[in-house]
Image (tube, rainbow, N blue to C red; front, side):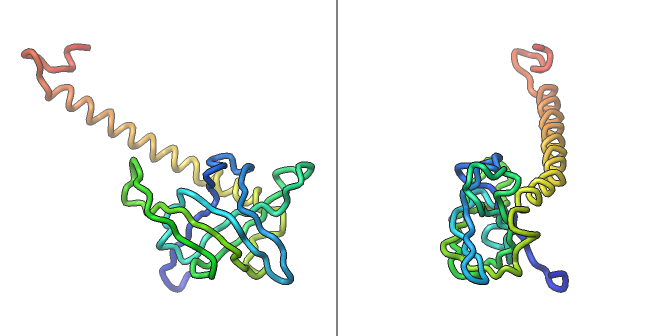
Length: 169
């Protein structure tokens, strides 16, 4: 994984779940010495260029099982049979981002590609979010600061009725 340039993708978000990871429906079922994954992920960055995906799956639908134990995570090679890559999404921002839907249909994964143990996926996903969410917030803050700078600059340059529009405030 470190000897050649590889791209990973974090396949957690679903159309029915969004940021509510506990509402994830993509499931895994143990079948012999493998796991079979079925479901769809949405808004997956690097969807068509990834060599492999981190995939969060629900392994238990029993409402008595706490969400923190109902999910299992896998590393899934992007060329595994049963994976379909959707069309590129038209993003409002970050248009250079390769954002796609990913569908898993009877995707068979060996147990060796499981991250942690069955039922530990939610904890693993949350730890990842704990690391990445502050970065996303910092990026958004930087973009907002740049927008404010550009708006102020424009307000000092643009004139209407003989004065800068900044003077109307």
